[in-house]
Length: 74
Image 1: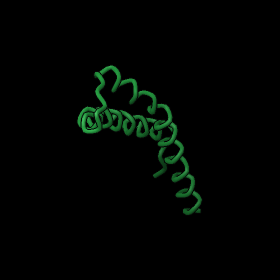
Image 2 (image 1 turned 30 degrees about the vertical axis):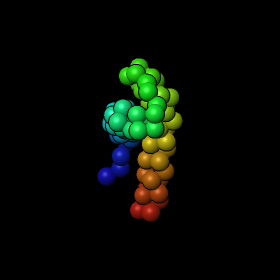
Image 3 (image 1 turned 120 degrees about the horizontal axis):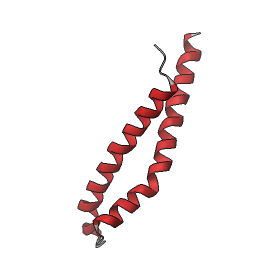
Image 4 (image 1 turned 180 degrees about the vertical axis):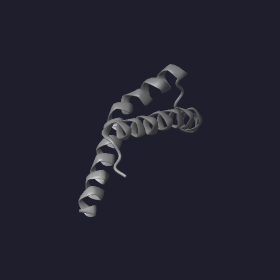
């Protein structure tokens, strides 16, 4: 069954949200190891800087793989 564009966007968005939360948690743990001291607001801002790119990347890759799958089925 073919995945719709809307479901591709939902999947990509969920991937970004989970990745964002994991990135913040990782930053909170790892940054102090390198002497980088920041507050939660800074961690969230750093994470947000990458959210848009990550969302577009996930969506584009999903659509690319869907296109390859559909062409392979023909």
